Length: 417
Image 1: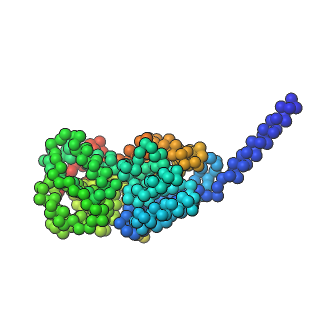
Image 2 (image 1 turned 90 degrees about the vertical axis):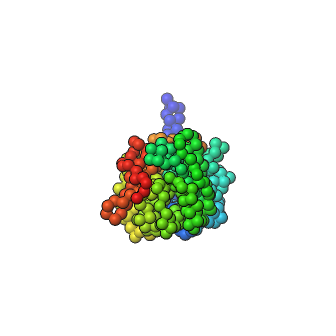
Image 3 (image 1 turned 60 degrees about the vertical axis):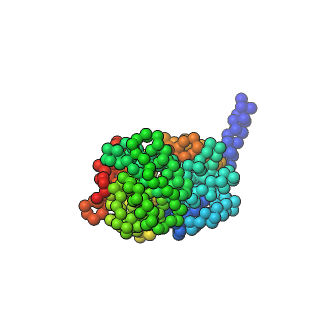
Protein backbone atom coordinates (compact mmCIF):
# COMPACT_ATOMS: atom_id res chain seq x y z
CA UNK A 1 0.00 0.00 0.00
CA UNK A 2 2.84 2.33 0.94
CA UNK A 3 4.53 1.73 -2.44
CA UNK A 4 1.26 2.39 -4.29
CA UNK A 5 0.79 5.63 -2.38
CA UNK A 6 4.33 6.80 -3.16
CA UNK A 7 3.89 5.90 -6.82
CA UNK A 8 0.57 7.79 -6.99
CA UNK A 9 2.13 10.88 -5.38
CA UNK A 10 5.10 10.75 -7.78
CA UNK A 11 2.77 10.36 -10.74
CA UNK A 12 0.67 13.30 -9.60
CA UNK A 13 3.77 15.44 -9.07
CA UNK A 14 5.09 14.56 -12.51
CA UNK A 15 1.74 15.40 -14.11
CA UNK A 16 1.65 18.75 -12.34
CA UNK A 17 5.21 19.46 -13.40
CA UNK A 18 4.49 18.46 -17.00
CA UNK A 19 1.36 20.60 -17.04
CA UNK A 20 3.35 23.54 -15.72
CA UNK A 21 6.03 22.96 -18.35
CA UNK A 22 3.40 22.94 -21.09
CA UNK A 23 1.90 26.18 -19.77
CA UNK A 24 5.35 27.75 -19.57
CA UNK A 25 6.04 26.69 -23.14
CA UNK A 26 3.10 28.69 -24.45
CA UNK A 27 4.41 31.57 -26.60
CA UNK A 28 3.72 35.17 -25.66
CA UNK A 29 2.09 35.70 -29.06
CA UNK A 30 1.11 33.91 -32.25
CA UNK A 31 2.96 35.57 -35.13
CA UNK A 32 1.00 35.80 -38.37
CA UNK A 33 3.02 37.13 -41.31
CA UNK A 34 1.43 38.58 -44.41
CA UNK A 35 1.88 41.04 -47.28
CA UNK A 36 -0.33 43.74 -48.75
CA UNK A 37 -0.13 46.08 -51.72
CA UNK A 38 -0.84 49.72 -50.90
CA UNK A 39 -0.13 50.78 -54.49
CA UNK A 40 0.14 49.36 -57.98
CA UNK A 41 -2.12 47.16 -60.09
CA UNK A 42 -3.32 44.96 -57.25
CA UNK A 43 -3.94 47.54 -54.50
CA UNK A 44 -7.69 47.57 -55.17
CA UNK A 45 -8.01 43.88 -54.28
CA UNK A 46 -5.17 43.63 -51.77
CA UNK A 47 -6.09 46.39 -49.33
CA UNK A 48 -9.68 45.20 -48.65
CA UNK A 49 -8.40 41.68 -47.97
CA UNK A 50 -5.70 43.02 -45.65
CA UNK A 51 -8.14 45.25 -43.80
CA UNK A 52 -10.57 42.36 -43.40
CA UNK A 53 -7.83 40.20 -41.87
CA UNK A 54 -6.73 43.09 -39.61
CA UNK A 55 -10.30 43.52 -38.39
CA UNK A 56 -10.36 39.88 -37.30
CA UNK A 57 -6.96 40.18 -35.59
CA UNK A 58 -8.06 43.26 -33.64
CA UNK A 59 -11.31 41.56 -32.67
CA UNK A 60 -9.43 38.52 -31.35
CA UNK A 61 -6.92 40.59 -29.43
CA UNK A 62 -9.72 42.65 -27.86
CA UNK A 63 -11.04 39.34 -26.50
CA UNK A 64 -7.66 38.37 -25.06
CA UNK A 65 -6.28 36.61 -28.12
CA UNK A 66 -7.13 33.52 -30.12
CA UNK A 67 -7.65 30.19 -28.37
CA UNK A 68 -4.84 27.76 -29.24
CA UNK A 69 -5.61 24.16 -28.31
CA UNK A 70 -2.04 22.87 -27.75
CA UNK A 71 -1.55 25.49 -25.02
CA UNK A 72 -5.13 25.39 -23.67
CA UNK A 73 -5.35 29.16 -23.55
CA UNK A 74 -5.94 32.32 -25.51
CA UNK A 75 -2.81 33.88 -26.95
CA UNK A 76 -2.54 37.39 -28.48
CA UNK A 77 -1.85 37.68 -32.20
CA UNK A 78 0.99 39.72 -33.60
CA UNK A 79 0.34 40.61 -37.23
CA UNK A 80 3.58 41.25 -39.12
CA UNK A 81 2.72 42.84 -42.46
CA UNK A 82 4.90 44.31 -45.22
CA UNK A 83 3.99 46.34 -48.30
CA UNK A 84 4.98 44.61 -51.56
CA UNK A 85 3.59 47.49 -53.69
CA UNK A 86 2.11 44.98 -56.20
CA UNK A 87 5.61 43.89 -57.18
CA UNK A 88 6.20 40.13 -57.39
CA UNK A 89 9.99 40.43 -56.92
CA UNK A 90 9.49 42.51 -53.79
CA UNK A 91 6.86 40.05 -52.59
CA UNK A 92 9.26 37.12 -53.00
CA UNK A 93 11.90 38.89 -50.88
CA UNK A 94 9.36 39.74 -48.18
CA UNK A 95 7.88 36.23 -48.03
CA UNK A 96 11.40 34.93 -47.40
CA UNK A 97 11.91 37.55 -44.72
CA UNK A 98 8.73 36.56 -42.92
CA UNK A 99 9.85 32.92 -42.82
CA UNK A 100 13.58 33.18 -42.18
CA UNK A 101 13.94 36.40 -40.18
CA UNK A 102 10.59 37.06 -38.53
CA UNK A 103 10.03 33.32 -38.06
CA UNK A 104 6.27 33.65 -38.22
CA UNK A 105 4.04 30.85 -36.97
CA UNK A 106 1.55 31.28 -39.80
CA UNK A 107 2.26 32.56 -43.32
CA UNK A 108 -0.59 34.33 -45.13
CA UNK A 109 -0.30 35.25 -48.80
CA UNK A 110 -1.17 38.63 -50.28
CA UNK A 111 -4.39 38.83 -52.27
CA UNK A 112 -4.73 37.56 -55.82
CA UNK A 113 -2.93 35.00 -57.96
CA UNK A 114 0.04 37.08 -59.21
CA UNK A 115 1.22 37.99 -55.71
CA UNK A 116 0.43 34.51 -54.39
CA UNK A 117 2.26 32.74 -57.22
CA UNK A 118 5.72 33.66 -55.92
CA UNK A 119 4.81 32.50 -52.40
CA UNK A 120 3.85 28.96 -53.44
CA UNK A 121 7.38 27.62 -54.16
CA UNK A 122 8.93 29.61 -51.30
CA UNK A 123 6.50 28.18 -48.76
CA UNK A 124 6.96 24.69 -50.13
CA UNK A 125 10.77 24.90 -50.01
CA UNK A 126 10.63 26.01 -46.37
CA UNK A 127 7.92 23.46 -45.50
CA UNK A 128 5.70 26.32 -44.40
CA UNK A 129 1.95 26.05 -44.88
CA UNK A 130 0.82 28.88 -47.17
CA UNK A 131 -2.52 30.31 -46.10
CA UNK A 132 -3.70 31.33 -49.55
CA UNK A 133 -6.42 33.95 -49.20
CA UNK A 134 -7.62 34.63 -52.75
CA UNK A 135 -4.92 33.27 -55.06
CA UNK A 136 -7.06 30.91 -57.11
CA UNK A 137 -4.78 29.84 -59.96
CA UNK A 138 -5.32 26.13 -60.55
CA UNK A 139 -1.60 25.54 -61.10
CA UNK A 140 -0.90 26.35 -57.43
CA UNK A 141 -2.46 23.09 -56.28
CA UNK A 142 -1.03 19.62 -56.79
CA UNK A 143 -1.10 16.29 -55.00
CA UNK A 144 2.62 16.46 -54.19
CA UNK A 145 2.42 19.84 -52.40
CA UNK A 146 0.77 19.71 -48.96
CA UNK A 147 1.92 23.24 -48.09
CA UNK A 148 -0.95 25.34 -49.46
CA UNK A 149 -4.63 25.77 -48.54
CA UNK A 150 -7.09 28.15 -50.23
CA UNK A 151 -9.28 30.02 -47.76
CA UNK A 152 -11.80 32.44 -49.17
CA UNK A 153 -12.28 31.94 -52.91
CA UNK A 154 -13.14 28.94 -55.07
CA UNK A 155 -10.30 27.79 -57.30
CA UNK A 156 -10.39 29.58 -60.67
CA UNK A 157 -11.20 26.41 -62.59
CA UNK A 158 -14.72 26.40 -61.10
CA UNK A 159 -15.35 30.15 -60.73
CA UNK A 160 -17.06 30.62 -64.12
CA UNK A 161 -19.18 27.44 -64.02
CA UNK A 162 -22.45 29.33 -63.61
CA UNK A 163 -21.45 31.82 -66.32
CA UNK A 164 -20.89 29.01 -68.81
CA UNK A 165 -23.94 27.06 -67.63
CA UNK A 166 -26.14 30.11 -68.13
CA UNK A 167 -24.83 30.71 -71.64
CA UNK A 168 -25.14 27.08 -72.72
CA UNK A 169 -28.46 26.28 -71.02
CA UNK A 170 -30.37 29.56 -70.91
CA UNK A 171 -28.48 31.39 -73.63
CA UNK A 172 -29.97 29.58 -76.65
CA UNK A 173 -33.48 30.35 -75.34
CA UNK A 174 -32.58 34.05 -75.43
CA UNK A 175 -30.96 33.82 -78.85
CA UNK A 176 -27.35 33.68 -77.64
CA UNK A 177 -25.25 31.64 -80.05
CA UNK A 178 -22.02 33.58 -80.59
CA UNK A 179 -19.68 34.28 -77.66
CA UNK A 180 -16.61 36.52 -77.44
CA UNK A 181 -13.97 35.76 -74.80
CA UNK A 182 -11.37 38.34 -73.71
CA UNK A 183 -9.04 37.66 -70.78
CA UNK A 184 -5.90 38.93 -69.06
CA UNK A 185 -3.04 36.45 -69.26
CA UNK A 186 -2.36 35.63 -65.60
CA UNK A 187 -3.04 32.62 -63.36
CA UNK A 188 -6.37 33.94 -62.09
CA UNK A 189 -8.11 34.95 -65.30
CA UNK A 190 -6.17 32.65 -67.61
CA UNK A 191 -7.43 29.67 -65.61
CA UNK A 192 -10.98 31.02 -65.80
CA UNK A 193 -10.70 31.41 -69.56
CA UNK A 194 -9.63 27.77 -69.87
CA UNK A 195 -12.55 26.77 -67.67
CA UNK A 196 -15.04 28.71 -69.80
CA UNK A 197 -13.80 26.94 -72.94
CA UNK A 198 -14.00 23.57 -71.22
CA UNK A 199 -17.50 24.08 -69.81
CA UNK A 200 -18.84 25.30 -73.15
CA UNK A 201 -17.21 22.45 -75.06
CA UNK A 202 -18.57 19.85 -72.61
CA UNK A 203 -22.12 21.21 -72.80
CA UNK A 204 -22.49 20.41 -76.52
CA UNK A 205 -24.87 23.37 -76.76
CA UNK A 206 -25.60 25.36 -79.96
CA UNK A 207 -23.20 28.12 -78.97
CA UNK A 208 -19.68 28.84 -80.22
CA UNK A 209 -16.77 31.06 -79.22
CA UNK A 210 -16.19 33.38 -82.18
CA UNK A 211 -13.52 35.58 -80.54
CA UNK A 212 -10.88 34.31 -78.11
CA UNK A 213 -8.06 36.67 -77.16
CA UNK A 214 -5.64 37.09 -74.25
CA UNK A 215 -4.02 40.42 -73.36
CA UNK A 216 -1.33 41.41 -70.84
CA UNK A 217 -2.64 42.13 -67.34
CA UNK A 218 -1.28 45.69 -67.53
CA UNK A 219 -3.42 46.53 -70.60
CA UNK A 220 -5.13 49.92 -70.23
CA UNK A 221 -6.43 50.64 -73.73
CA UNK A 222 -9.24 48.52 -75.15
CA UNK A 223 -10.68 50.67 -77.92
CA UNK A 224 -9.18 48.67 -80.79
CA UNK A 225 -10.00 45.39 -79.04
CA UNK A 226 -13.63 46.45 -78.57
CA UNK A 227 -13.93 47.21 -82.27
CA UNK A 228 -12.39 43.83 -83.11
CA UNK A 229 -14.90 42.10 -80.84
CA UNK A 230 -17.80 44.02 -82.38
CA UNK A 231 -16.68 42.90 -85.86
CA UNK A 232 -17.37 39.26 -84.88
CA UNK A 233 -21.01 40.15 -84.09
CA UNK A 234 -21.20 38.38 -80.69
CA UNK A 235 -24.42 37.77 -78.79
CA UNK A 236 -22.49 37.68 -75.51
CA UNK A 237 -19.10 39.02 -74.38
CA UNK A 238 -17.10 37.62 -71.47
CA UNK A 239 -14.22 39.77 -70.20
CA UNK A 240 -11.95 38.37 -67.49
CA UNK A 241 -9.48 40.70 -65.81
CA UNK A 242 -8.37 42.38 -62.61
CA UNK A 243 -9.96 45.68 -61.43
CA UNK A 244 -7.74 47.92 -63.57
CA UNK A 245 -8.59 45.81 -66.63
CA UNK A 246 -12.33 46.05 -65.97
CA UNK A 247 -12.15 49.78 -65.27
CA UNK A 248 -10.27 50.53 -68.49
CA UNK A 249 -12.44 48.20 -70.58
CA UNK A 250 -15.78 49.49 -69.29
CA UNK A 251 -14.68 53.12 -69.64
CA UNK A 252 -13.53 52.49 -73.21
CA UNK A 253 -16.80 50.70 -73.92
CA UNK A 254 -18.76 53.76 -72.80
CA UNK A 255 -16.55 56.16 -74.73
CA UNK A 256 -16.84 54.11 -77.91
CA UNK A 257 -20.63 54.08 -77.82
CA UNK A 258 -20.59 50.31 -78.36
CA UNK A 259 -23.21 48.36 -76.41
CA UNK A 260 -23.00 44.60 -76.36
CA UNK A 261 -26.24 42.70 -75.76
CA UNK A 262 -24.74 40.61 -72.93
CA UNK A 263 -21.60 41.73 -71.14
CA UNK A 264 -19.84 39.92 -68.27
CA UNK A 265 -16.99 41.30 -66.15
CA UNK A 266 -15.61 40.12 -62.80
CA UNK A 267 -15.07 43.15 -60.59
CA UNK A 268 -18.34 45.04 -60.99
CA UNK A 269 -19.55 42.33 -58.62
CA UNK A 270 -16.52 41.71 -56.43
CA UNK A 271 -15.66 45.36 -55.85
CA UNK A 272 -18.86 47.21 -56.72
CA UNK A 273 -18.16 50.34 -54.66
CA UNK A 274 -14.74 50.75 -56.24
CA UNK A 275 -16.11 50.27 -59.76
CA UNK A 276 -18.99 52.70 -59.13
CA UNK A 277 -16.44 55.37 -58.22
CA UNK A 278 -14.08 54.67 -61.13
CA UNK A 279 -16.47 53.66 -63.94
CA UNK A 280 -19.72 55.27 -62.83
CA UNK A 281 -23.20 53.87 -62.28
CA UNK A 282 -24.13 54.19 -65.95
CA UNK A 283 -21.17 52.13 -67.07
CA UNK A 284 -22.20 49.22 -64.82
CA UNK A 285 -25.87 49.03 -65.78
CA UNK A 286 -26.95 45.60 -67.08
CA UNK A 287 -23.46 44.13 -66.72
CA UNK A 288 -23.41 40.46 -65.67
CA UNK A 289 -21.01 39.55 -62.89
CA UNK A 290 -20.37 37.27 -59.93
CA UNK A 291 -22.76 37.87 -57.04
CA UNK A 292 -20.37 37.74 -54.06
CA UNK A 293 -20.82 37.15 -50.36
CA UNK A 294 -20.53 40.90 -49.73
CA UNK A 295 -23.94 41.20 -51.44
CA UNK A 296 -25.60 37.80 -51.00
CA UNK A 297 -26.20 37.06 -47.32
CA UNK A 298 -25.35 33.51 -46.30
CA UNK A 299 -26.42 32.16 -42.94
CA UNK A 300 -23.21 32.27 -40.93
CA UNK A 301 -22.84 29.59 -38.27
CA UNK A 302 -19.50 30.98 -37.09
CA UNK A 303 -18.33 34.58 -36.88
CA UNK A 304 -20.31 37.71 -37.62
CA UNK A 305 -23.29 37.89 -39.96
CA UNK A 306 -22.96 40.06 -43.06
CA UNK A 307 -24.85 43.03 -41.52
CA UNK A 308 -22.73 42.76 -38.37
CA UNK A 309 -19.51 42.62 -40.39
CA UNK A 310 -20.55 45.56 -42.56
CA UNK A 311 -21.32 47.60 -39.44
CA UNK A 312 -17.93 46.69 -37.92
CA UNK A 313 -16.20 47.57 -41.20
CA UNK A 314 -17.93 50.95 -41.45
CA UNK A 315 -17.11 51.73 -37.83
CA UNK A 316 -13.43 50.87 -38.34
CA UNK A 317 -12.88 52.06 -41.91
CA UNK A 318 -15.75 54.50 -42.39
CA UNK A 319 -13.47 57.12 -43.86
CA UNK A 320 -13.86 55.25 -47.16
CA UNK A 321 -10.19 54.95 -48.04
CA UNK A 322 -10.73 51.27 -48.82
CA UNK A 323 -14.01 50.30 -50.47
CA UNK A 324 -16.14 47.54 -48.98
CA UNK A 325 -16.63 44.49 -51.19
CA UNK A 326 -16.05 40.78 -51.59
CA UNK A 327 -12.34 41.06 -50.74
CA UNK A 328 -13.24 42.62 -47.39
CA UNK A 329 -15.23 39.47 -46.61
CA UNK A 330 -12.38 37.29 -47.92
CA UNK A 331 -9.81 38.68 -45.49
CA UNK A 332 -12.18 38.28 -42.55
CA UNK A 333 -12.99 34.72 -43.66
CA UNK A 334 -9.28 33.87 -43.63
CA UNK A 335 -9.21 34.89 -39.99
CA UNK A 336 -12.27 32.82 -39.11
CA UNK A 337 -10.77 29.68 -40.66
CA UNK A 338 -7.52 30.22 -38.77
CA UNK A 339 -9.47 30.78 -35.55
CA UNK A 340 -11.28 27.46 -35.92
CA UNK A 341 -8.11 25.63 -36.95
CA UNK A 342 -6.07 26.93 -34.00
CA UNK A 343 -8.84 25.84 -31.65
CA UNK A 344 -8.67 22.31 -33.07
CA UNK A 345 -5.03 21.69 -33.99
CA UNK A 346 -2.99 19.16 -32.04
CA UNK A 347 0.19 21.23 -32.39
CA UNK A 348 1.61 24.30 -34.09
CA UNK A 349 3.49 22.14 -36.58
CA UNK A 350 2.67 23.19 -40.14
CA UNK A 351 1.14 19.90 -41.27
CA UNK A 352 -0.84 19.70 -38.05
CA UNK A 353 -2.34 23.09 -38.89
CA UNK A 354 -3.13 21.79 -42.36
CA UNK A 355 -4.86 18.76 -40.85
CA UNK A 356 -6.93 21.02 -38.59
CA UNK A 357 -7.96 23.20 -41.55
CA UNK A 358 -8.93 20.16 -43.62
CA UNK A 359 -11.04 18.92 -40.70
CA UNK A 360 -13.26 21.98 -41.23
CA UNK A 361 -14.02 21.11 -44.86
CA UNK A 362 -17.75 20.90 -45.50
CA UNK A 363 -18.52 21.73 -41.85
CA UNK A 364 -17.69 25.43 -41.52
CA UNK A 365 -20.24 28.00 -42.71
CA UNK A 366 -19.33 31.67 -42.55
CA UNK A 367 -20.56 34.82 -44.27
CA UNK A 368 -18.55 33.61 -47.27
CA UNK A 369 -20.61 30.43 -47.61
CA UNK A 370 -19.56 26.82 -47.02
CA UNK A 371 -15.83 26.20 -46.62
CA UNK A 372 -14.90 23.07 -48.57
CA UNK A 373 -11.56 21.76 -49.89
CA UNK A 374 -10.47 19.13 -52.35
CA UNK A 375 -7.58 16.86 -51.44
CA UNK A 376 -5.03 19.27 -52.96
CA UNK A 377 -6.06 22.17 -50.73
CA UNK A 378 -8.06 24.04 -53.38
CA UNK A 379 -11.33 25.66 -52.37
CA UNK A 380 -14.35 24.09 -54.05
CA UNK A 381 -17.03 25.69 -51.85
CA UNK A 382 -18.01 29.37 -51.70
CA UNK A 383 -19.10 29.43 -55.40
CA UNK A 384 -20.72 32.71 -56.39
CA UNK A 385 -23.98 32.77 -58.39
CA UNK A 386 -24.26 34.71 -61.64
CA UNK A 387 -25.94 38.08 -61.24
CA UNK A 388 -26.85 41.08 -63.34
CA UNK A 389 -26.43 44.64 -62.08
CA UNK A 390 -29.51 46.70 -62.90
CA UNK A 391 -30.80 50.20 -62.02
CA UNK A 392 -32.56 50.30 -58.65
CA UNK A 393 -34.89 53.12 -59.66
CA UNK A 394 -33.27 55.51 -57.20
CA UNK A 395 -30.18 56.47 -59.16
CA UNK A 396 -28.21 53.50 -57.88
CA UNK A 397 -27.70 49.84 -58.68
CA UNK A 398 -28.90 46.49 -57.39
CA UNK A 399 -28.06 42.84 -58.02
CA UNK A 400 -30.46 40.37 -59.59
CA UNK A 401 -29.33 36.73 -59.33
CA UNK A 402 -30.07 35.03 -62.65
CA UNK A 403 -28.35 31.65 -62.22
CA UNK A 404 -28.46 28.90 -60.95
CA UNK A 405 -32.23 28.47 -60.99
CA UNK A 406 -32.43 27.61 -57.28
CA UNK A 407 -30.90 30.97 -56.35
CA UNK A 408 -32.56 33.32 -58.85
CA UNK A 409 -34.14 36.55 -57.64
CA UNK A 410 -35.26 37.81 -61.05
CA UNK A 411 -35.03 37.41 -64.82
CA UNK A 412 -32.11 38.59 -66.95
CA UNK A 413 -32.54 41.69 -69.09
CA UNK A 414 -31.52 40.64 -72.61
CA UNK A 415 -30.55 42.34 -74.74
CA UNK A 416 -29.15 45.02 -72.44
CA UNK A 417 -31.00 48.33 -72.56
